[in-house]
Length: 626
Image (cartoon, rainbow, N blue to C red; front, side, top):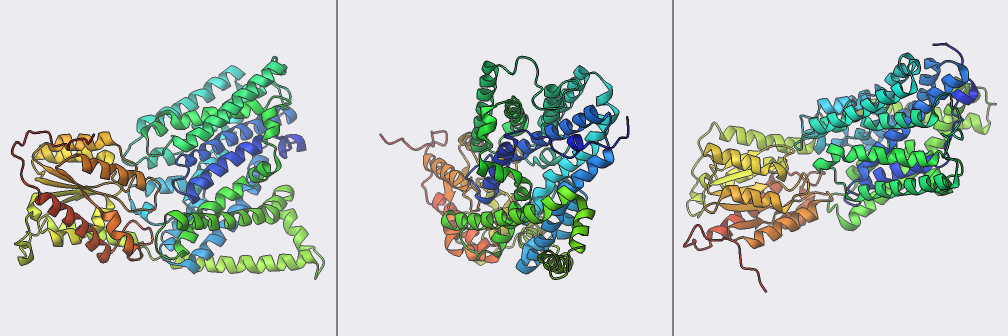
């Protein structure tokens, strides 16, 4: 490899694909809607995978073009340009985010130090994987969780140029394509094989299992550039005809339409998302980009529409700011309902702040340093004439940054260690652990209860853990099997295990609607395992999450069909008391636990009041009205 200084054309980013900023705009828009308006775009998370393909394509293209133009690749120059592009906006975000977190206080301060360190070392994804065994990372509103994808990309920026320099440029083009294709397929297959419906954190955040988008983008770069091709206009023979351009434009348009469609329907809780869905997103993204590479692309011109390009140019800053701003707005927002108008209002406020912050960052931080470098920008500021606008602006900026730095240190020191929801969940787990070693007390108040605690098995998630002390008080001796991050899809296995072990009691309470959508087949499977002699109580869910209305509707409909199934209306009971819940609007302290236990008690009493069946093998479904 020659160690030459890159030419401005090859190394300073003059390479540009018309319409590519539109692809970036699509990517960041889907992510923003997904985060800021929960439930509106259930597959909006796939915008990250679109970003991965764009990054893989651009980085590989720039590296190969530099070598074709100069005869070598300057690793130092490449990494310097990446630092100029990414670090300034990131540092400003971290300082401003920490300062705002100190002002807001509460749960947003939890784990702030580890998040900042992970962000600065571009290891956020692996830090979150290490914390993945703890559900408390989901109950605490992590301020910089969105930086996991930046970690994946930065790891790619470090390792990929080395592979290009020492391997790819030394082997034939077909070998490059084979190697890159194998990496993409291997990563996608690894995600599918390693995926766990209980907790997909490892495969989603892992660089190894989520690098296929970057590899697909790199594959496209090698495929389209060809041997010695250094400009976009040099496309393979046959792609410059009018028919070819129309065909690629149509194909690219259909690919973008498919991406938008998937962002609407591909829920992140589906197995399909991890077993081919995200890989399909990567391929569709590559198809859309390929359509832009043909000279005169109509799709490229359409995506150059000024407002779309404005968003695309600022997509990095928009992505950085949107999640921390949303978390801070949510934490500062008054407690109460987080649905309907309130949810939209919070989203709009967060969006406005995000756009302003990203715009200012792009204009005054990112562009000057990206164009002139750290030293030249600092020199231009320091050499400004006294009392000039530039000098006054620089003085103000230095004072502001100093204040933000000091406030950020104070925020890191103020970390309370545990979030509000975590405290409630741990108290419930302690109560369950104590119950396994202490015989249940017999209270006089329970003597007139028709159904006693030793007849009830309760299966749930972290919500039931928070309610455990109140359930034990209402039903001494109740058997509670609750685990953090558990969803309804795990219910059949849990119920079957207890039935096989002989520990399943006559009345089974299931509260598993919080952590994802449910379907009728899962409920039918649970009921079939229970058999005709047991009664089932389904607890509906309260959470500011897009799938909750569908979950509650499904549970209510199912309970209406069967005589031995009853609905515990926890959602309805708690609505007047949302101010008593934790800020996540999911977990709660003693007051919320009492309301939860009361909803369960009412359902138990309704079931107990029904007359016994004369034939236990009879069909328990209610007649369908004509």
